[in-house]
Length: 294
Image (cartoon, rainbow, N blue to C red; front, side, top):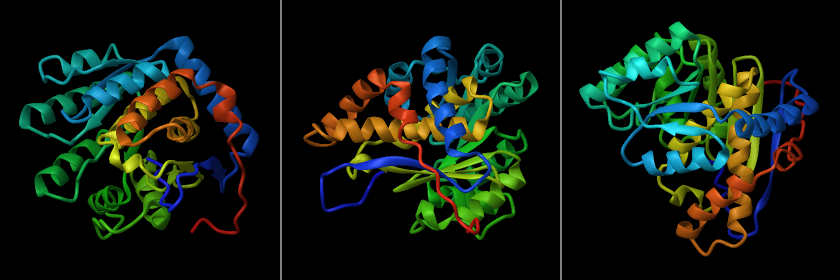
């Protein structure tokens, strides 16, 4: 998530910028509305996620105002997806049972109109992960959230890119992310020093955060869970995804002001998310005009 490489500990101001018809007023209002709706509706998010991220993802969802449920066994994952407001499909620890649970849950989610978010963890590392991701793409995710290398690899699965590039950063993969979004028919979010969100036509970026964010294991996976929660309460899935990433960016920036290191940054992040107001997220929205989408 929005880790800012810098030699200074001073936080940067998060900003959401748009290169689309979604103007600054719409984006700011959507971000603020999502925060309010998370608290008011407390959406139930089924998190089929990896062992490493379960603790942080569950606590982050609780702090933000959502309700987590770590239900992944194939005998119940599909049934539970019919009860959930959103589903997370994270392929970080893709054992056969885990994979079957993900397929079952996402199939029901599509049938019931429940938003679901794919987190293609290390999708370029093995053919098994690539094959699983390919199966999941046929279930048309609502959002794909990954780092630049994962999105490039997944774009290759969808026929839109060369494949994984571990040296890439989010700001350099806009074209591939847009192509993947258009091919998969969903929103694609690329997180990194600058977060990028696109539906193939519109593009939003979020700047800010804390340079120590990459030291918090599973922060990206937990961001995926928050994206799912926001999609459960936000009708514009592009704006809802950007709102989720902006929430974490604002919260981790505020947490970083008093954090001595990654350990205290982690728990202060949860504190800040719990206290986050709609104005704190919405007021950070800025608009950017560009002549092209590259």
